[in-house]
Image 1: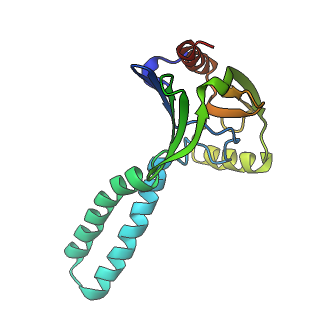
Image 2: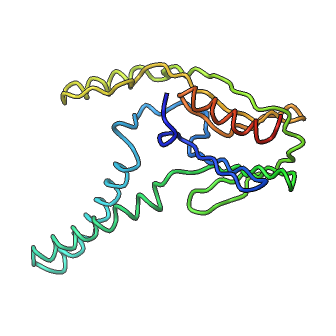
Image 3: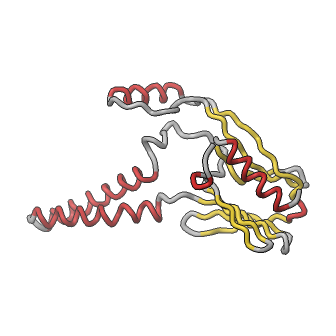
Length: 203
């Protein structure tokens, strides 16, 4: 069970509004690349290093001063890492604004910019449910390969290649359709989000 500070969602209440936000709202199975090896920080490092390398080559073609080339590389990399992490490899966010006074639930997604994805009438939200979904390993050969490479380097990746159970928090609408607004492998966190939203909507 995780504490509130470590949850993958936030809830804010403002008079007649409840604002639910989370970066984990997709139900797709994980890539064979594990977050322990390949994450946004690592991606930002690689991208920053690539740009710094290109700049280094350009500077090297125009000057023979090694110190200048090294400083340019270091400066480009130092500036590039936070840029890529904040603007390119930042987490996509889903935000659902439940407005009981206005009778609407607005679903936003944001990456570089914030976009209104859908507006749902609150009266059409008949229930909030939780579904469990098991994701089996789709590419066992790739998993074995990555594990083999990791062992050669003296490292073990906890949980890598194991079957995973994902818990989905869904809005059930009166027309029979569903909207997934949160996914997590920690059931207690999904239950907590479920209870907060359900209590607010009084359904």
